[in-house]
Amino acid sequence: MSADGLRPKGNRLFLRKSVAQIQKEAAKSELKRTLGPINLMSLGIGAIIGAGIFVLTGQVASANAGPAIMLSFVVASIACALAGLCYAELASTMPVSGSAYTYAYGTLGEVFAWIMGWLLVLEYGVAASTVAVGWSGYVVSILSDFGISQQIFPAIQYAGGEGPQWATPLVQLVQEAGATSFPMTGTFNLVAAIGIAAVCGLLVLGVSESANINNAIVVIKIIVLLTFIAVGVAYVNPANWQPFIPENQGPGQFGVEGIFRGAAIIFFAYVGFEAVSTAAAEAKNPSKDVPIGILGALFVCTLIYMAVAAVMTGVVPYLELASPAPIAVAIDRMGLEWADLPITLADGSPMNLISFLIKIGAITGLSSVMLVLCYGQTRVFYTMARDGLLPKAFAVIHPKYRTPWIGTILLGILIAIAAAFLPISILGDLVSLGTATAFSIVCLSVIVLRIRHPEMPRPFRVPGGIPTAVAGIAACLFLAYNNLVPMFQHAAEDNPLPLMLLGGYAAIGAVLYAAYGFWNSKLAKGIDITEETTISSPAEAMGRGVDNQKD
Image (cartoon, rainbow, N blue to C red; front, side):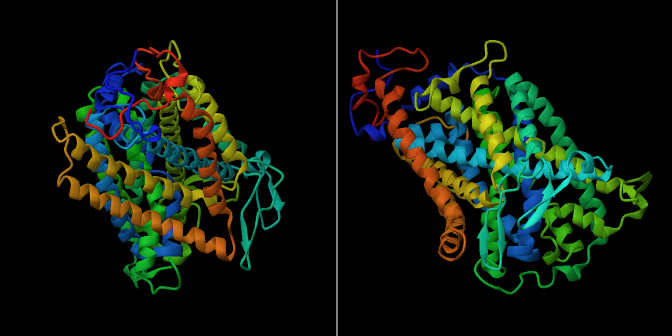
C-alpha cells in the first residue's frame, strides 16, 4: 500500500514528501508533546548563549573585528533573523521533528534532504564537541582555584605547549613560524567526555526533564551575564573603543572585512534557534509556540551578546582578549576588591565573588549548550532513521521515557570521542559553514513552498514573503563564503586540514547515502512511516515518490 500522495513518477533523487504526508507524520508522532513557548524560548537561549559569549567573543575581537565586534553581532543577527523568520513559517506549517531536514524533504527532494541532514550532523555534533572542550577548561579552572586540579589534573608537557592531564585532547593544533603541526599529548580530554555523557543521560530520561533542568540553567547564566554588564559599565574606558574599526591588517583582520569575517565566525553561536525548530514535534502547540521560541530567543540573545561585547571591549583593550575565557579576563581587569571574600584560594589570593560566579555561569551555560546541541543531533538522526535513510537503531523509542534512547547513546559516544581526542578548535569554521549553508536551504524551501502551494494555510507568514527569503539566502551564503575562502587560503599556504576535513566529511556522507539511504528510503519504497505498510518489493524503490508536482 502506497503512502498518501506517492506516485511512481519523476527522478529518483528528487522524490519529495507531500506536505499532507509530513503533517500526518507530525500528528502521529511517537514523541511526547510537553514543551510550551517558554520551554522553547529557553531551549533556544540555552543553545545560543554559551560558547559564543564565553569563548568566541574575545577571540573574534582580538583577531578580526576589534571593538566593532558589536557590528559583527548585528550582521550575524540580521542573517539569523531572516533565516529565523523562514524557520518560523515552515515550523508553523510542518511541525515535525527533524526541522530543516524535513522541510528540504517536502520542498526540494530526497537528495537535498540528505545534504541538509548531513549538514545538521556537522552543525550539531562538531559544535557539541567544541563546546565540551570549552566546558572542560572552565571546570578545570574553577577546580584549580581550590587546589584540586593539581592533584587530579597535573600539568603535562607536549610539543608546542602544556595542558592538564585528562582535560587535554589527544591531538593538538600548534602553529609556529608559519608552520602547522599536530603533536600527540599522550592524554585525552576525559572531562569533556564526561560532560557529553551526562547531558546524553539526561536526554535518555526524557525531554521534559531535560527542559526543566535547562530552564534553571538558562536563568542562572542570564543572571550572571546581566551582573557582568551591570558591574562592568562603571569600569568601561571609552578610549578602549578607539579606533572602533581598527585599520585592516590583512584578509579578515580588522577593517570592514574583519567585521564580516567576525560575523561569519560568530554565526557558530546562533545555531540555538535551529534547535527550537527541531523540537517542533515535542511542542504542545507548535504552530504558535515554535515561532515565539525562535524569534524570542534570537532577540534576547542578540541584545545580551552586544551588551557583553560592549562592556568587554570597553574594559580591556581588544588585543588583550585573545583568551579562551575573555569574560574572566575582563573581570580580573576590573579589580573588584569590594567583592573579595574571606576565603583564601590555592595561590594565596582571596576568592572574588564576581569572578567565581562568572566561572559558575560559564560552566552551567556551556552545559545547557551541550544539552541542546546533543538534543538536536539525536532528533535529526531519529527523523532520518524513521525515513529509512539511516539504520533503524537511531529511531528506536524507549517504551517508558518515549525518547530515541539507542540513537542518543550511540551519538553521545561518538561526540564524546571527538571531544576527547580531536583538535576541536580548528573546526569552528566548519560548524559555521554548515550552519550558514543549512539556513540558506531553509530560506529556499520557503520560496519553493510559496510557489508550489500558495493556498496552504500558514499560521505564521514571513513578513515580506519571497523577497525576505531571497535576502536570507544572500545573507547566509555571504557568511558561508567568508568561512570557505579562508579554508582555501590556509590550504594553499600552511594548513590544509580544515579543507581536507570538509571534503572528507562530504565524501563520507555521499557514500552513506549511496550505500544505505538510497536503497532503504521508505518514501522510495512507498512506505507510509505512520503505518509501516510496505509495497510488494523493495525493487519498486526506483521511480517512486513525488517529484516536481503539486501535492
